[in-house]
Length: 259
Image (cartoon, rainbow, N blue to C red; front, side, top):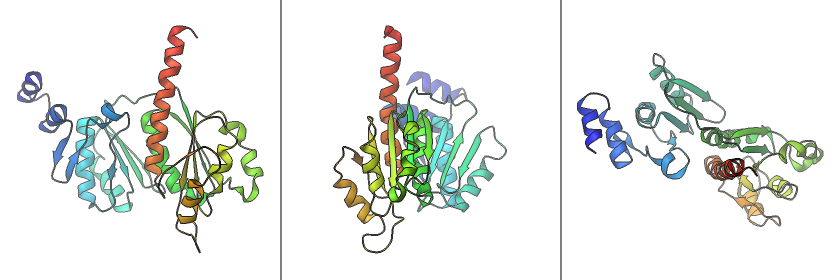
């Protein structure tokens, strides 16, 4: 604590950074940012833009970069993206926006990006499922795992899946994203020997639409897989990232022992 206070007094550490170091979070006018989440959980805190004003998103992004080295924003609309890009335009930080996925990543100049020796493959039933898949990818890439997205391999023409099986089977964990009846994750889980995380999405319509039928189908899957909530790309990405961290730890341990 003494070193932290001395750093603040010397102008070497901001008040927000000091608070984050001492309590694990930083208080802003827009909320409290969990700056210690990545150290504690292995995955970074995300700023949910939905329901927040653009200036509140910017405020939290600035605090995240200041205290954790980077900011990860989910469910961002055009106004929030524009506000964040403008706020960091004349700084050393790098801003990456995925409009379709609604994600923003702001990386500070001194941030040390993690790198994991693990592969995650995200597959989608249709191209319309990309927004959820892209949100999952943002989490996986933030954790430092290699991430591949394969789109539009729904089971209506199962040859599209079989054509990609070689690539999918190279992954240490698979995220399968599908709407309608949610059949894709079940089929994928029957073809690979790694964990599969099924994500039902609300791209369907009619009876059981808005992801309801997909969720029910995945919960009743006859193959072994994990299931997250409807459109929960963030949760799927976080789970995959945690698995990837464990895979990386095992591979590094084996390498050090000479196995």
